[in-house]
Image (cartoon, rainbow, N blue to C red; front, top):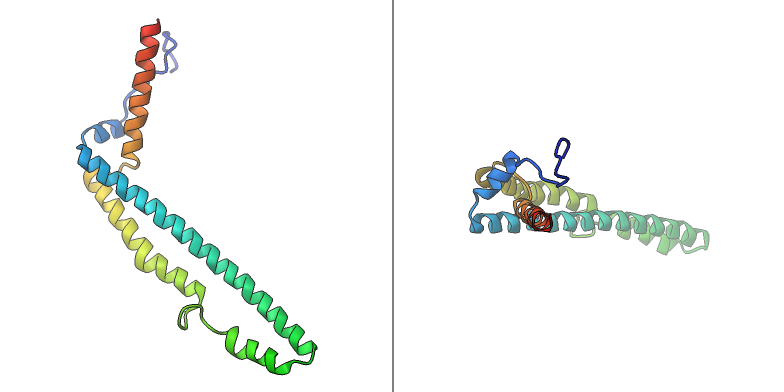
Length: 150
């Protein structure tokens, strides 16, 4: 730190450190599980977005195939692509963009709000309280070992 003549990397504790220290192990573990759960849900959402984009690309290729089938004289097959497969939904009558929107509004938003509410109630809204604990422990251990070496 600037102004620290000892050459160590000591830092001033932040308000979040005191919040994280006030949690019980059970509270910290519950917050950690919620946070990791949200991270997994967000990764799943990313994969859903990828599915949406990939299906859209596939539909573009089907449309190109429709044109080529018509040019090759296969009007019935081109008509089937146009009338049955291209306008069809991927799940029931829903298109992938509708699945993405429903996932965002009906699941992702509600579980994200719940996780944020629990974090607010238990840890004053602090994120990554388990990681903060590990960071503090690793830094304390490094400072202690450096002190013994001096």
